[in-house]
Each structure stands twice: as C-alpha cells, then as structure tokens.
Length: 405
Image (cartoon, rainbow, N blue to C red; front, side, top):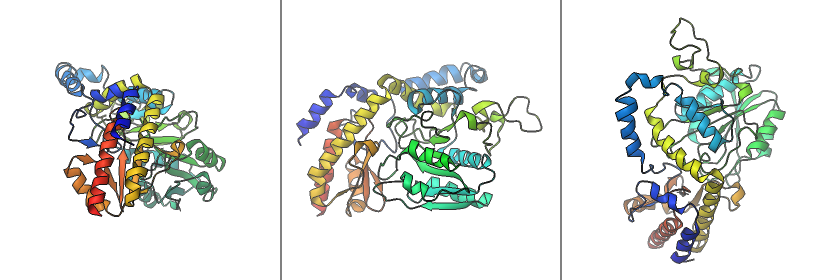
C-alpha cells in the first residue's frame, strides 16, 4: 500500500469536504488519531460563541431562559435522539457528566426493580462504569455479579445469560468496548435480560456519532454517553441520558434538583417530579457548554449517520491494512476485531514498546491514544480524519517501532 492509495481513497470519499470544517485539519505537522477521546472543534464555533455572548447572553440576559434555555436539555436531547440515537422525542436529555448520568440511571433502574438487588457489570468495562456500580452497591446494599469476557470478543449474550437470575435488577454494559472497539449485541443482550426480568443500562460513549444506534427498535431501557468524542462537544461537554418512555414514571432518579421539579419556580417545600423526561434533569443546565455539540449536530445531520458509519468502516479497514503491512512485521498485534460488523470507530494495536514510544509520538505531532498495558488506540473521526492522515501516522509509528527495535 502506498500514499497514493490513501490519496485515491480521499479523492473518492463523499465526506472528504467535511474535513475542512474543523479547526486544525490544515496543520500539516499534526497527525491526530485520537478523535475517540476528544474530537476537533467545528471551525465556525468561534462565531457561534460570539453571537451567543453578544445576543442570547449579553442582550437578552435572563430573558433567554424563557426563550429557549430552560428547555434546551430536552430540545437538544430530542435532536440527538432523532439523528444519532434512533429514539422518539421525549426520552432523552442533555446535561450532567457521564458519571453522574450513569449514577442516576443505575439508581433509577434499581428503584424500578425493588425486589431485586444484584447489579451485573464486566471487568473490562470503562473504569467509571465499574466504580459507579461499586459505589451504588455499597450505598444500597446490593450485590455485584462480575462478568469476565474474552477481551478479544467482548461481552456476549452467553456471558450475560450465565449470570442471569431472578435477583438481577440491572446490567451495566458498553455498546462499544473502550479498549478493543468490539461492538456488543445490544438488541440480543437486552432481549435476554428482559427474558429474565432484568433491565440494562448501556454506555454509548464510544458509539454515539460513529456507530448507528436504534434505541427504540432495540428495546433499550436506559442509555447514556459523552458528547466530546465523535460528537465534538469539547472537553467536559455534557452527556446525554435516555430513558425508555414506559420506564420514566417507574424509575425514580436519585438527584432531585429544582430543574426536574413539576413547577420549579413555585419553589415549594416538597419535591414533586416533573412529568416526562424532565424529571431526570437535576440542576441548572450547562447551556453554554452545549453550543459546540449543537454546531457538530449540524454536520452530523448534513452527512447522515449511514454515510458516517460507512466512512468509519473504511477508515478502520484502512488502518488494519496498514497495521498488517507495516506494524505486524515489527511485532505489533491487532487488539480489535477484524470483522467490521463488530468493530466500532477505533482500532487498538498492542506492542511492548508503545509505553515508551507514546511520549515520543506526541512530541513529534503523531497523536494516537494510549491504553495500558501496551496498546495505542487509533481513533478515527469520520468527518475530520482523512485516509492520508491515517496513512502518514501509521508510517511514522512504524518508523519509531523500527528505531526502537
């Protein structure tokens, strides 16, 4: 494979023009393969922020709460649900961090299952998911049933069925494994859980915006995910939370804030939950922090999730071909699925030299992610990553590996 092959792929890419609509893509000295940790900002964002400061904040001031801010967690949630999550309106909000959202959803699931006390989670899940489960178990006197899936295959239906019982209240899993990129069978696992009377909370951090999701069609109970990866919301941008419509009334969320009250401006002595998904809002929503994601949603809607996924598959296949040609002969091992149907938007490669080399790569402007013990993740954002960028980055990584050897 040659650099000309990458150039041909870029020339044939129907989404290639989107790359110019992100900050920093014209910097030839930076090869950025970490979009699955932090996406690039949209290029017209500074103008949007300035307009917000001048008009909505500076001119309209507190009146903007009545003119859109108050409902923004719901309106942006519905927009995300329609274009990214495959969900009907009235089930999704934007606000809080993923950690807080996980806490609220897992606690909500437990409240909807008062006769059950076991939480299922896998040891390969992202640390936050595991830590939140451990904290809730200690807080509520619940038991944890641990899954130990094959790291190369991820959590399967058989793994889940092996621990199901009439005491399992909720299962906490990731749609796309944060290290390997393995895509779990959401509809199959969810259906198996329902057969045993359990609910499932799905973490969509590594799929939202890169892998099409159909929450309603899959019968998903609860889902959350961050917005700073493939949704380019910026560092610390608010997460989203989805609660299936028929569970909203059953699942009492534990952080009762004034913005989730039935009539927040009455400010009465007792909390009464709002109707619908608003009851899952807690405090004052981070309106300003939603602006970068709103800018990215314009691009997502224009491109369409089907085309975004097709580009994601093409990019990861390109990366795997380059791995086989350039990195494998140097001792690197592919730690992600070869089958695109079960591979998300990133590719992980392991090599014992990577812990030492990652600092060298970053210093020289080649920026993949590092995951212990010895893996680098090649996070490929479909709208901002080019085939030539992937090609150049992997060739530079191969050069460093050869020097280290």
